Length: 456
Image (cartoon, rainbow, N blue to C red; front, top):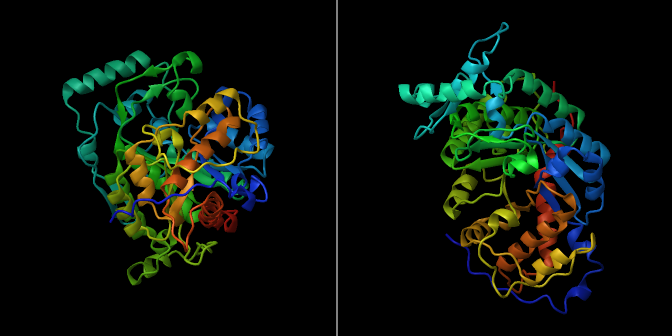
């Protein structure tokens, strides 16, 4: 059921209600950005200085590639009160991780064979995800079916670029490093992790989502292939990272593009395996399983129900899918929106004017954008309206100059404000919305503060 059409009213004449502009902007948290990619990831001190000058309260800096993990950690060290670090492997870089079905012993991963196994021209129609003996398994026979001609073309491409392809990192080695970073960074999250069936595998020297989407002249040589990373491979890596998040009680920032069916299947697997430790919803069916590992403490969440909070960042999904996910995880799932991915059609003419951010002062380019507001898609509007107000967060998803995060967060805040209904009991104004989003952030993030280290 779609929410009613929003009724908005102007904020003109209401600014006197605010003690200062900080009452709005200082309450907001950018729950998803890539500030570690700013300045090609080569000037972390400058990026940290710009973060320190933001009017936005805090920024969650996402890791993406293997190389970005230490940069996130360094930004936290430079701005400990402003930066919330998130560690994890983005699906765009999952091809650099090797997985083996062998248990124990040492092995040498053949680089050519590894990329032959994980790359494909097209995804299978559906990858079956199922739990067996508390382990995640996939329909690998379907996932790895390739005709002979396609296999020959793939091997030819790999052979041409083999000298550029990075040596694969064993999953267990990556997970050991990920655990160590999470433990020594109290209050850290897991992110950006997820699934993506749209992207194609790139070879580039600066491994980050921002660099991968930039012209090659800006980020070094980028070789764009026509191959994708098998969704079964992505699922295995995501499952491992999500399991670590559940074990340590850390919130997760999720990326999911054209893989909602696989994501829903994985959520079912995690529910079966972890029960209330994952969902936060007690159930007779899951109670025995959740307590079957006495060496692990039950997470004492900052909320009443426990569980691990998940946030789907910048979703471009239907209201029906939002409702379906919330039925599965009614207490722990959130959605964060960015002006970047919402952009297309203009917001309503009744959009409410807001005071300018306190710092940095708008540039001439910013002033021009204020006169010509961004255009937003109807799909994004419907998704925002379908998201319960207590599950809504804001993000910039920005990987360039951190100084522009204030403006990007202000743009999406303005759009969300324009779409909220107003009633006599619940007036629609900037201060009320900022307070609600601030409360959402604290509810989402608080479990990370309860679990600063490993329970082992």
